[in-house]
Image 1 (cartoon, one colour):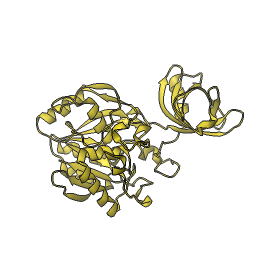
Image 2 (cartoon, rainbow, N blue to C red; image 1 turned 135 degrees about the horizontal axis):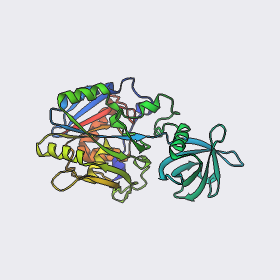
Image 3 (cartoon, rainbow, N blue to C red; image 1 turned 45 degrees about the vertical axis):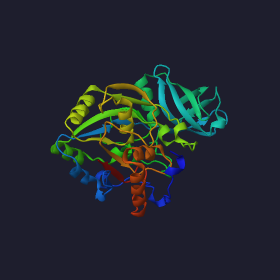
Image 4 (cartoon, one colour; image 1 turned 180 degrees about the vertical axis):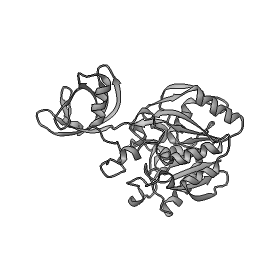
Length: 350
C-alpha cells in the first residue's frame, strides 16, 4: 500500500494534550469487523465484550524518564539528550539522541544537573542525531541509575505540545508496568484501572503479559510512498512459557485472545507459529506490518486512535481491514474522539 492512503484530516484540537482524570472513563469505539457495526461506549464498558476463558495480553514494559537536558563544555550550550537504551552497564554506555546534533561531536563533554554533578563524554556517532555517551560516574550502577533518572523527565511523544509535569510520571505509565526499558508507553494499556482489572479477573477473563520495549521507531516519520520499502527499528521482545501456554490453551478452546495495543500485536507477530499459536521468544523484532496481513494469534485488538501516516495506524488497519478502520477513523473525527497517547480508544472485535 501507499503512505498517502493513511493520511486524513485531523483537527489539532482532537489531539489529547492531557490524560483524563479517570483512566477507564475515556471514550471507547467498538467496531465489529464482520459487520462493520460501530458502537460508542465508555472504556470500562469493555467488560461486556469478554467472557470467562478469554485472554487479554498486556505489555508490561515500564517507561523510564528518558528526556534530560545538559550543557556543553566551554560554550555552555543547552543540549537535549534523549536516552534510548543502555548499551553497557559496567562502562555506563548509553545510546542517545541529541538536539541540536550539529553542536555535538566525538570528544565533547556534557554536564548535567544544577551543580554539573554528572558528566558524559561523546564517544561515537550512530545516526544523524544519534550518539553513544559514556557517563563518568564512580559510584555503583544502581546509584548511577538513580542519579541519571532523577535528572530525567517523562518522554512524552512529540504530538503532546507541552513540557511534562509531575502528573505525567504516573499517567504516562500503565498500572502494571514492571520491566524497565521503554521510551514509549503502550497507550492502549493506559485506559486500564485497578478496578477494571479486578472486575475482568472476577469475570474469569485471564490476563497475560509480554514485554515489548517500544522505542522511538514507532513514531519515526516514514519517508517513502511505497510502504513495502519502509524499515523500522528493532524492538526487544520477551514472550515466556506462561503466556504461551495461556494463549495457546485459549486458542485451542476457541476463546478470544485480545492484544492490548499495537506493541502487543507486533510482539505476537514476532512470536507466532504455524496454526495460529504462540511460541516462546526472546530477541529483537523489526517486522513492519501494513495491510494486507493475516494475523493468526489475536482475535481482537484494543488500540488508541493514532495520528495520520503513523506505523501504528497501519498496523491497526492491517488487523481490522483498511476500509473498516479508515471509516471508523472518519467517524472518530466526526464524533470528536480524542487522538494520541492520552486519547480515546478503539476495540476491534471479530
